[in-house]
Image 1 (cartoon, rainbow, N blue to C red):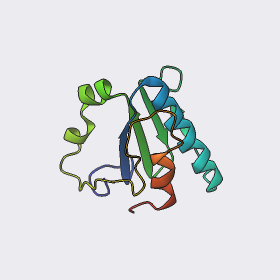
Image 2: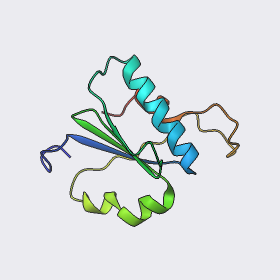
Image 3: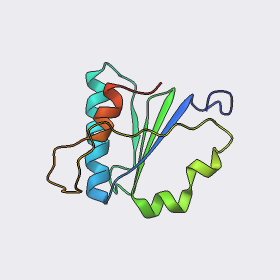
Length: 113
């Protein structure tokens, strides 16, 4: 985003499998950011969890349910900006929702920026 927008240097776009999953991902993200010392947090959308936006200034995180992400297509809107795809290192082999796996936490532990 740097050089393409005055709003932020980077956006992170992620999806959850359901509204509940989006809410959990957003909570984990907010918790991790606070643990890392981020004090300026603006959060929007936690009441419905269709699309949660977490703005920390130079980075804006968007966490969507799949159908909302497909509708807004933020990746297309910012297609001219350089894109990096993040693949988790420890992704579980199944989609068992009881697994204690938080890709947002892993992303923040070793961000690609």
